[in-house]
Each structure stands twice: as C-alpha cells, then as structure tokens.
Length: 126
Image 1 (cartoon, rainbow, N blue to C red):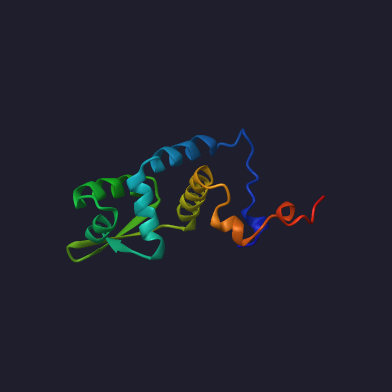
Image 2 (image 1 turned 30 degrees about the vertical axis):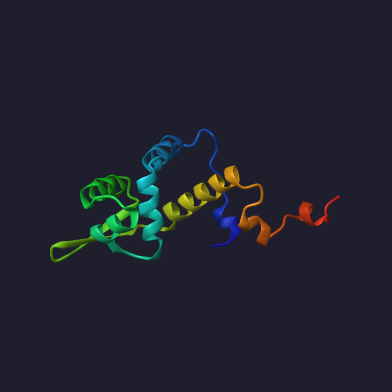
C-alpha cells in the first residue's frame, strides 16, 4: 500500500470518530494486545494463544469474544477446535504503532529510528 493511500483524510467531524474511540477502548487491555501480536503470523487455537499470553483458555476465549464482536478477529471451526486469525492488517498496524509509541516513552532513540535517521539527525536540513 502506498503512503498516499494510507494517509488519513478524515476530519474531526467524521462519523467514524466515535467508533474509533470504541476500537481504542476495546484494545485498552494488555492481554488483547498480546493476542493481536501473537496472531500477526497467522491463525492459532485458543489453547495455543493461552500458552503464548500466559492466561487460561477460558480468559483468552473471553478476550477473543470481545475481539470478534469488534470485528478484529475471526473464528474458524475445525472439528471441536476453534482457530482465530486477524480479519485485516489494521489492528496489526494499530497495535504495532501503539507499541512503538510506548517504546518512545521508555527509550530516547528507539531502534526503528536508529535504523532510519531523520534528515535533522544527519544534519542535512539546516
């Protein structure tokens, strides 16, 4: 996806603002963020996710139910097992950006910025 197609063109009056706030509310839980990070590479069963996020399968199922309600994950049943995956790349990117922002709080120069210095850091803009 090119940078131009990813630019947000919505303004403060957008009808999507309230729904966006609901998405942030839905993601305002460390376990749900961990689940989304775990699902970046593909679908997983509840038990596998529970092992990764170190929570009980029951707790993970409850979080997944909320993520399904918010249309962030989808479920696929295979026999008596259910596998979950991310619906699209938006939740993945939103969580990645939030983690990068958190990294800025902790580190002065996070790794993603050290690898790609800004023009002012290299002295080319004066």
